[in-house]
Figure 1 (tube, rainbow, N blue to C red):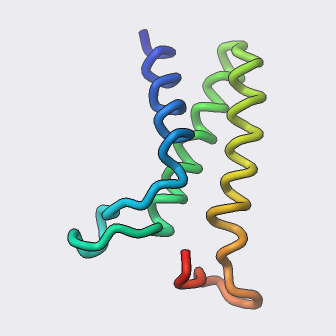
Figure 2 (figure 1 turned 135 degrees about the horizontal axis):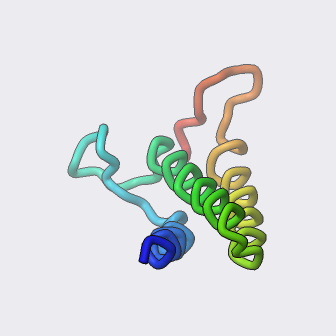
Length: 91
């Protein structure tokens, strides 16, 4: 039962990672790409990957690890301003 929940969450994260949202810390009337939301998507998929590895679901582990790395680079790492620890505002 728990594995089904993990798969559903991972599937939803993969499907929605590219979408805008209203975040939980920002203004509720503005939809855009928020860093916090992107980081939480990465964390969710990273943890799902760990669970898949732990229970021997190698196909899911491989797919989610690849997607996690790709999306982390695309939505998080590429938004860092060179020489700084803050994110570029055009996320």
